[in-house]
Length: 121
Length: 206
Image 1 (tube, each protein chain N blue to C red):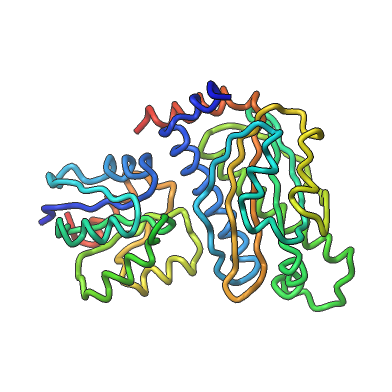
Image 2: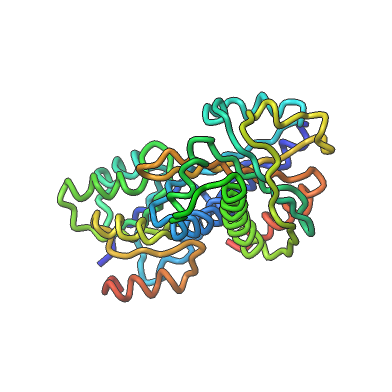
């Protein structure tokens, strides 16, 4: 059951695209962060059930967010959505606990497919 | 100038930065495959300036304080401008190792390697931009325009035909190497209206 969603991306357009792609079955509040530090604050404050996370961001990047969540022992699924499509970026994100990796530019179908695979629908 | 700056409002800049971010992600991936190492990408920086202020604008970047090699790849079509790849001189000397070249490195080999890397970087970046904006561009082969130079020596405002330039700048660095590259996409002022139309279309669709 998804009761709260956190979308993290420094681009307003990308956040909008992710929000538009979220499954309509999830009738939950959506919180938005524009960098890694804001993301960690909102994560603590709003206790999201799922996080959509960009990698390349100011202040603290997505790898830093993943490392911080891993250190806290968080089990909340994090789906990375990134323009950095290098194999090494994927491997690093997965090793830091990301549950899935979607390459930008993404489509709503990409998001739906991943959440289905993770049994979040 | 104020009028031009107003055309690139926050939403349009954000959309353009994201387009370039995605395009450079593809360029970074191509370079990572060529060098077999992870390429760190910066967040794209947006500059809009009078060309007489170009040096001042670019010299804010500490990376340009050292000696550099500059290559260019002009493009035209629905947008007109130049892709510029800038490499630090220390990084240029690492290219043979990065590309697995085992023979003696002559200045000709080095030039070939530079042209290959520039072509991969700018080509992948422009392909990324054109596919997202759904536009067609044609571009010519890259050329080396200056070696062992500085930004101030290179960007002579009097040699630029445009009054205003929009520049998207992104930095690529490699783990465990001195190699650094800055990619600049210059757009001429006559490209602003078609670019803005395309950005607005993207923004309307979300």
